[in-house]
Length: 123
Image (cartoon, rainbow, N blue to C red; front, side, top):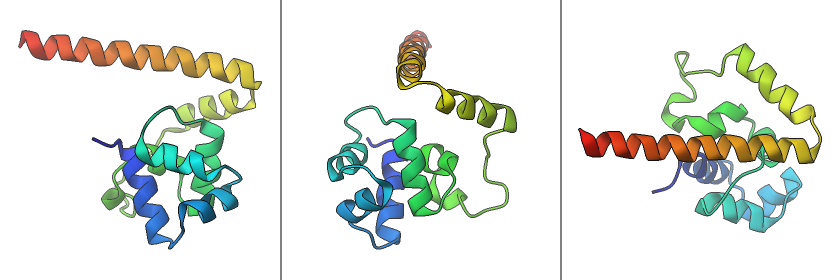
C-alpha cells in the first residue's frame, strides 16, 4: 500500500501533466528520485520534497500528509506554526545534522508502528 505522499505525488504530477522526467528537471532532482518516491521504496529527503512541492505549487504538508480530496477545502488540516518553525530550523542545519535528526525520527516512527501492532494484537 502506498503512503499518502506517494499517492499525492503521483496524482499531482499527472494533474499538472508532467512526466517524472520533467518534474525531476524542474525540481532539480533525478528522474530516479521521483520514481523512487512514487514507488515508496525508501526515505524522502525534505529538501527534495520541498523542491517538488514548489514545482507542483502545493504546500509541503499537503504533499506529505493529506489526501488530495481535502487539499482544496478550508477545513484541511494544517501544520501548526510551531511545527513549521521546527521544520525550518531543521532545514537550516548542515546535511550531516539533518541526517541525524531524520534517522532518529525514523527510528521513533518504526518503534511507534511496532507498539501499535502489539497493542492491536493484544486487543
